Length: 437
Ligand SMILES: [Zn+2]
Image 1 (cartoon, rainbow, N blue to C red):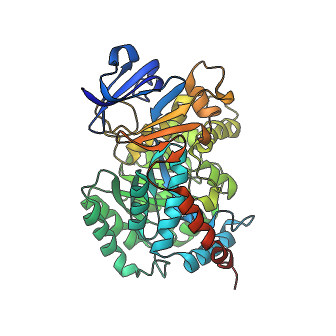
Image 2: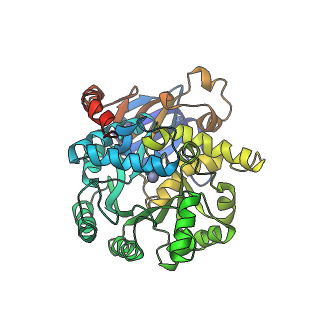
Image 3: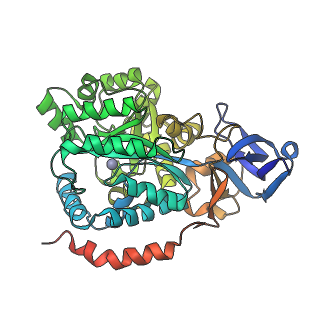
C-alpha cells in the first residue's frame, strides 16, 4: 500500500495560497507528512488506513500564537478588577501554587482544552517551560516555548542573572525536535530592562529561535515606557534592534500610525488576543490598519486567567467581527483573512510555514476534522463561513498531528482527562486560598 493514511470524502479547506476548497476532497499522508491533496476520486484509497470523512470538514490544525496554558489553574479565580490590581493577585496566586509539578498539571489542562478545539501548535509563554513541553508531548501537540525573562524575583526562583543560561540550556535540550520550537520570552518591556531584552534577542538569533514579548497591551504600559525611556513601546523595542521577522509581539493594542509602519518594515508579527483585550478592558487593536500596512497578524487565546476559556474558535470569530464594529466597516477583516490568521499566518510568525499551517504536499499532517452534520452548520454553501462565524470548539471531532490521531471523537487519545481533572480538583482548595492572607 502506497500511503499510511488517506482521509477522503471531506470538505477540504486547504488554506493554501489560493485558499483552495475541495468539496469532495482527500488528503494522503506518508511518514507524518502530506503527500497528496485533491479530489477524492483522484487520490483513491491506496493506504493502510482510510478514514471516510463524509459530512466532515478537513482543515489545517489551528496555530495559537499567544498562550499561558498552565495559568488555566487560576481560571475564574480573580475577576472584575482593573488590570493592575488583577495582575498583582495573579502573581500572588502563581507564587503560592506554581512548581514544576503544578505547571505540568496546568499546562496539561490548558493544552488539552486547546487540543479539544483543534489547536495543534501553541506558542506558550510560561515559567518552567520544560514542563510545558512535557505536557504538550503527553498530548501529542506541538509547542513553541523557552526561557522566560523577568527582572526581579519570579515564581520559578531563577535569578535574573541566571535566565540567559537557563534559556540557552532550553535551546540545547530541544534544538533538534520537530514538536518544539524554542525561543526566548521576556515578559514585557516594563518588567524586563533593555539589556536583558537585547541579550534575549541575541541568544534567540544565535540559535535561530523565536523571540516573543508582551507589547503595547495597555495604555498604562504605553505611559510607563514613554515616561521611562522617552519613547513608546514599539519605538523602544525598535531602538533596541529587536524587531524582525523572528519576533512575535503579543497584543499591540496601543499603536500609532508610525508604530504600525515600523512593524511592517521590520517584518515583526503581532499576536492578536481579542478575548483577553476585551475582558481586561485593554482596548481594541488596530487590526485592519495593521493588515493594510502589511503587518503579519496572527491569533492568540492568551491565558485562561485573561479569557477564561482557551477557545480559538471564539478568537477567530471575534477577530472577524470586532473590527467590523469598531471601524463601521463590514469588510475590515474578511473570512479568508481571519482563517489565515488562525492557521498559516500563525505558522509563518513561528517561522514554520514551510512545514505547518496549511494542507499542502510536503507539510506535516497536522489536521482537524470538523463535524458539519450539526444544526449550526446547515445549510452548507462555502464551509469557510461556518468555520469563522458558526462553528464551535465542540464541533471538532478528530485531530491529527504528524498524521497520527491525537483527538478522537472529542477526547485526547494519549492521556486520560479524568486523571487531570481529578488532580486539578484536589489542588483547588489550595488555589482558592492562594490569593488570601
Ligand atoms: Zn499574555
